[in-house]
Image 1 (cartoon, helix red, strand yellow):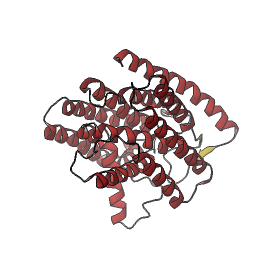
Image 2 (cartoon, helix red, strand yellow):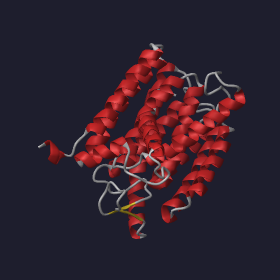
Image 3 (cartoon, helix red, strand yellow):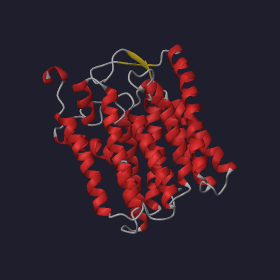
Length: 339
């Protein structure tokens, strides 16, 4: 498919999701499905939660339509439909969690089931480039996928951050696959995902009128995880790693730190690097834009690696960008202390 078609798909997904999110916002408000502020929140007041319904509906419908209306152009129609339907089921279950706070083990088991079934329709090529035996390769891919779903959910804690991260990953995959030709059938799917989250992001920007909810963060984590693993299976493992590096580092380091401290790491909290920075400066938009800047550098490093640049240098440059941002967030002080 051409550049113009990918851009058109992304723009269409953006517009439709924006309109659909507005409709969902009115429905959630009428039904009083709200996220109330508490000691772990990064917002004040009550904000409708569940905007991910619109995001997931647009992506799933567009992926399925594209798979069957353009067979062979975006990969195996059956596999794409299977992933879309698994995402729909996981998102629906996660919306129940938004409504009634289901037990942690129950949520994890449902995610594990979706990942196990999803691994059956991953590309046949090894994700870890033959470094592991076939069975171990699939098990490792499944573990990474499960962790990505959860970290994506954990990191959805301030206005605009998920739109920035998911949009960056989607745009990055679309650019890499279109330019390099590796895994080119992922470009259209990634463009749709990026457009949808950007359309939602308009209403989720500071101050947010609506929140994504687990229906969106878990569902997006599942779909983006599949796209990243598929990109890695196409031989682009380093670009796949670089595109998600900020979220991976912030979430993983925070998790390990909480485990070492003996905290209940499975519970909601406000100890991520970006959350500390948001509390310090009081401006979600500023933090989201700093993450976007870092992600643009990561996209550039990923593109360089995908086009034959020095792999180690690309990883070092990307790692340095993330390390600097995490350090900057950790050292950020409240505005009143800086005066």
